[in-house]
Length: 398
Image (cartoon, rainbow, N blue to C red; front, side, top):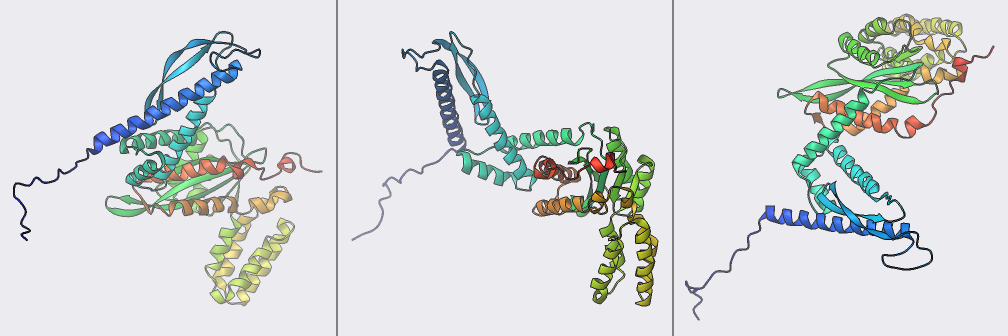
């Protein structure tokens, strides 16, 4: 039997799908369904206010329908037309539209966070298509990105009206791409404890380096927004920050972070002696007052010299006094104000969240992601639970 195909036999037609038409039809379908659902909810709300369905007669009826009016309502699926009910004896008030707006807002925020967290635009499109049944265009994502940038900038530059007796300052290093190379970018952060004892984030800004010029720019940015001088500023020791604090907050006490001080001393200690020397250093700050701590410093310095750790001894002798400013404040606050640990913990969280990004395209993107996370942290448990009882600071016992 011959298997040769008839050249005249017609080939099966190739089905071609116009992706743009399909997308438009799908978007229209989603939009129409959303319009129907919202209008059904509005009708149900009118029935609830009237205590009766449309055309229903009963003794409990509070009002009757008086038609409706049309209102255009913008959604992420496009513009829909709502039929807003009118009632004869009652004003029609509904929370449905506001609830929908809040839901859409939460979806938008999730999309913005995905973008800021380093998820590619294409991946955001795929995720939204899986969730909604219709993808969100790159243009929409770009617009949402601009929206959150504006929102974060507004938060970052808000007026500072609170007084912060204690302020912690530090920098976090991230990577950015610049001219085909990868460079470090520093985000400078300030955390404050207000007069009521709650923690806030007064500000964050990009610093090219943690040098004097960057810290001066940061301090000026805080002062111009209304930051008053603090009673105590806690930070690591760097010539840049000390110079800036002297220029902008000369009346504030400065506390060198004790943990950074320990690290500095331990950098001159062999690994075999780490545990022993660390215990000696911690004993300095376990003393009941400044004079006792000074006595302990002399003892530790002498012991380090006996162990032939001359460099470590010099670091303790020359730097310990800078870690004693906390003794001028209430003893109940000492543990919280002698180190930069509150800010260090935030920085660890920021590093964890930004690690997935790798290299940021620019310093602004790095700043936006850090600020987005800082704003989130400040608005939740970290910022809503009292950190310190400030009464001893303002009403000292006699």
